Image 1 (cartoon, helix red, strand yellow):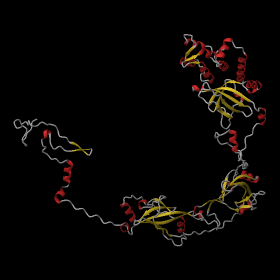
Image 2 (image 1 turned 120 degrees about the vertical axis):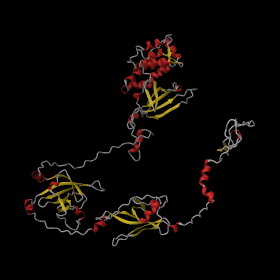
Image 3 (image 1 turned 45 degrees about the horizontal axis):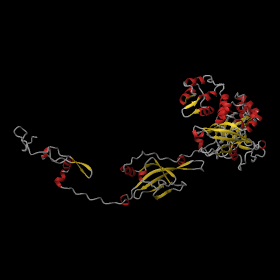
Image 4 (image 1 turned 90 degrees about the vertical axis):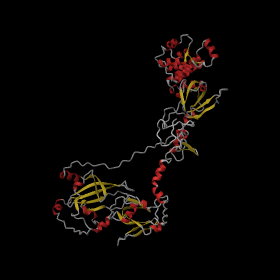
Length: 640
């Protein structure tokens, strides 16, 4: 490396000399660690250990020196003394926020006003965050006014929080002791204070006015009832001519209301209306004949006549725009008179004749208003809860103290101690369940079923009672209308499903055979055929070879019965002619066995119902080891 020990000289040939004493030419380390953290440090020496001749200050330190130039000239400035502490009751003394608000008050007992608007002032005292509500006193108002809520801290919610000046604004509702106040505006001091604290105020609203107070400010009207009695021509023309209508007033929607009948008389001579009550014997009502006295009925009033004192003065033609006339009373229409809605359902012959001549309405049929009795409510049973029988659970819905369901006494006496017993096998994919056998006992007196499993030594399964006496519901039957298993459902080859478990009937005892012969009408032809095949095979002499094989193999008899059942069930199957040929083609060695995988492929190609419970049992009995199936016995079930 070439270096120049003389600082300031240019690096030119002849002016630089090589320092042979230097042996380290690495760069100095700029990264260090302190307390486990990496810290950057500026290098002080260059390559070969030469001292760096430039400013060792960092850019941050240079910036700090540039910013502290006055400090270098005048020294450190003196800290200003802390401001004196001023308590809130001194800083905010006599500083109050004022808001203009109102609240609405219901007036239930007055016919002239339904609600009342009361204007108030809400004061918020900043010194202790208390509030007060004051209503300006109005002379002769008859309402207790003045200080509605005295000065105190008001609760905002149920958690104990209190209202703060940050919660107040224009155009919002606040609830104080169950009353809702609407804040519409505030004074100038309040506006300046809230805006100085960074609160954006809503635009001001107009103060709501009390409608009754505004009504009293209007000048009093003078009501003059002019005389209008010049109706002599109408009186002479229609004297003693009255239209009679039959109407009802349906008030059943209100509490203790009812549907009552009335007679409406319309007097043509002066267009007056009269409503008479229709009383019946023992109706429990006082015999008042008139509901409304004879008078003219206004239909449409003028705009200013809504507040007319009708209970004091009569309504003249100046307050009425339209009166009720004869054309308003039509059969089949409703009209409202004095707040009651009457439905006209009929009229007398004179009224029909008058409407036909006057208005051209010829058809005014009578409307049937008699209320029909509602259809009886169908008693629906609650859903079955799964405890006991459905009949026992249903008795709790018929009486407060449930009684046991009625039983067929004659059936119990005739079939007393009569039990049908069947031998069944469990249809299960578990290999341990294939050799299990069960005894079904059907009690003819009560139609109940019990299942018993004979214990087998060293089988690993505890035998004994599998199901106690109970009625078994057939699958796919509804809970509301359950269908139970009967004696006609039990025959050789039948599948019985008991609470999700499927059983196949394999054999019966001698009593069942005699019972089925004596009660053949209860059984299907399939069930009778299965019993006849069993009796035929039992009575037929067995060949010597078969008898020896039967003595050696106790399952041969069961296999023969199963084959006969499948022959009866699948006698019309389309593949029975080709099934043997298909298996023989695959069995090239003529051993009588095929692989399990090839066996199921052939059955699938020939559409053999391998999902059937009987066919599954036949496949199990024909299985030889784990991978072979004897198809000779299997083909016998599909041949004639």
